[in-house]
Image (cartoon, rainbow, N blue to C red; front, side, top):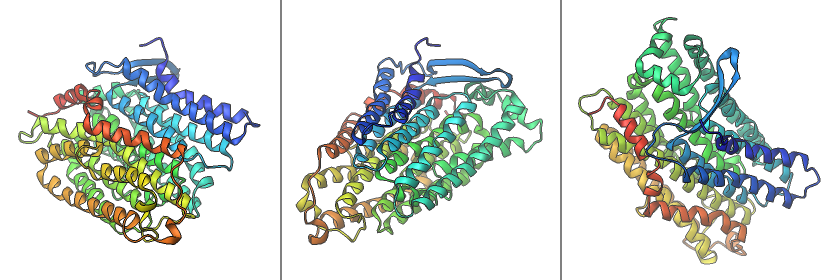
Length: 513
């Protein structure tokens, strides 16, 4: 354990910022925005400190903090960091300040907006670092409160309905997960993720649950699966997402797609897969088809959208389903007739890289749509525009880079994760990879349609006349994200080196040759 509470600072510095904003009632909107941005940047700063001292060759948890919290329930305040957690902390550190910059023009209650956003950021970091289910679940549920108010109070015309739908779906799934972990605690007496993973590997967890009844291990697994499936979301639990992302203000949409959706995938990797490997393997065939539904149907649904934000929202379902496809393919191959271990390692590496890279590219696309919307009296329809490239060439170029990153163009960050995922899935479940290529085709169609309709063709005077050039704040929003697209596309090892030893260890623990 470490004496310096770096991880606690990562979690609670944004909370301190929210408290500062709450007590500075006389602060102007500009002061509130600056304070929010500074406290939000703490995640990136402290995350880089953690990365600088991080040893990738140590695949266990680092910077561990542990204190007894509720002794009667054997609950401990325990934080830890490994390669998976570090990647997501850095992602949060990048997306959060850019999302705030995209919200810079919000004038109504800027102080309240900033405080709620910092609470949301703090909760997300807590999810990525907590190692005990009790306070992990506190952070998991705490994220819903600020997200609900950010959507409802600063969102679009149908924001109230979207916010309630978002909360009801997520709380509904979380209730099943909470019941599942209550059963685990009753059977084992602990909520520690690391200890539970060890017991699962030894078979002790399943035996403990089976004492209550032979069906209990499966029932608990399904409860945890449902809670995580809603959060990602896994098809068909995705119906809350398009309206939520479309109605949320731009900065909140960026955070929802860039960070919060990764909380669900993180839960699959940190909780479901280590604790229930046998149950996950048993249903992996069904889950593979559901993941393919998200990959293919999500892309085809995006093709049918005329609202640009809903188009990007469905695109997020498509891209996150690639992560689940890889995970389920690895689970399906475990214990099979000589699946390739290197294919499993490629699939898992691609999953983590895809989580980071999708967070960057999707956040940038939402920012670009928000900039169009703010200049065109709230219009964001696919058929409302034309010829924007002629009046805003720099903006068109930045949007095009973000679009081609999402498309998976070689040389940009989006290519690396998708390539590794398909490389791995082709080696484990070739039929699933073949079907998933339909999603790649549909993604190319709707993104290129978006590019052609909005930025090319004849200019439309009502929307292009007086289209303002990018401001300094808008450059500060897009340029860092676009720069990362090039850096990680050309030098993916910058990120991959943090997770390669961890992935090798994971693959080594599988029943693979």
